[in-house]
Length: 586
Ligand code: ARG
Image: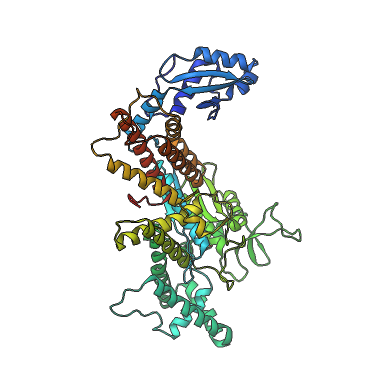
């Protein structure tokens, strides 16, 4: 007997269940059900199954057709080709399934059965340094992944592994010690992010100049590094001022980027200081790391330099200093043993892949990563200029992230102003920011993270094509229809026949839950972005072909309003998961 499918399940799931029930001998075999152009769905699983059971796939497919229960789900099934099943759904089943979806706040997206704990390392700028486009990527992608995972019920802990430690601080601290008022703020003064960064830049340049020209300062700066590492109080207090000043700047950029960062999640490199010596001791005692020319190293059979010699992961330098690797290994211990992570996720530039490969392997050998724990680098590609080369200013310098964001907001505000009839300046500014930042985020999220992409503002803020502006307009347009509907409200009418554009839209809406699950499982926000773009396109066709408020029959009006409303809610939820706003009016 076919099990009664739950109302909340998707059409896709209900058909898959019906197919399995029609052929009990199939057991748990995957019917390989897909959306298809020929019918609504195609199931290709009979081929593999026939091979397994030793029969003829067409015959097997025929048996399934006979075994399918008569009901209101399937309108037609056809065997085609070597044994494919082409399945057409009834219009009523589409409307009923969507109505159940609409009644659910989560739009039919289930919570995962066994949620785990994911510690995700994202948005990790460096203290006393300007943020660049690379930090755009680790912030935007990281934020989307956090939102998507949390929505599925996973426990997510963010760690912003900021670069707040290292020898460069010796120079900065020493300079500040000798020029004590350089970071003073006016008594009344709130310092803006811009000011904070310009203070840091000024100090950086001045101390660098001195460091390069004055041997004695250089020596004092080097001794200062030792003091910092030894935890000298005065030195640490000065170091803290650089961190604080940088945080003012970071927060201003995150704010502009509309990305929320919590202070307690900022655990930079310095946060693992107390663990470094022990991490090295454990590695050395267990034999995972060995001394080589004074340095503590981990070797790998498959990691060799151009000369064929093995390139080790250096955990401790021969002068006793700890580097990036020791910190990351300590962070793994903290995340696994203290935070109880099942999954460690790192949103970091692909150019650091070798580092993470070696770090993960070392942690496995040390027993810090066991079978039950997964460590994944979600590596992202490079942001390119229009010329296809890594993004640089005309002078060949790295582009400041703030400048890019400002330009995007400016462009978007111009578009909003042009389209707006009745918006105040304040509204234009607010929407300009939502559209501009959305455009930048969407461009970053709509290609798979690992790929490089071109930063092209003209394309990003275009109203047509695969842009967030297009999606935001689709959303705003629906809201405007819903406002104009007056008395009429969105109500599903399963008794009505659906036009082709309505069916296509409805069947796509049905796939939202599966798409979210896929995006979460693969850490692939671009799959969600692609889904939303298609949703907006299908909505555009529907809107062109099916009059909504002028549909005539009140039931028809309600049913179309229902499709509009569910589309809007799905767009809104999906965009929210990507970290992009959907203004009610544009
Ligand atoms: N601060 C580094 C950078 O700007 C990224 C840190 C990545 N995270 C880590 N655990 N190593 O490139």
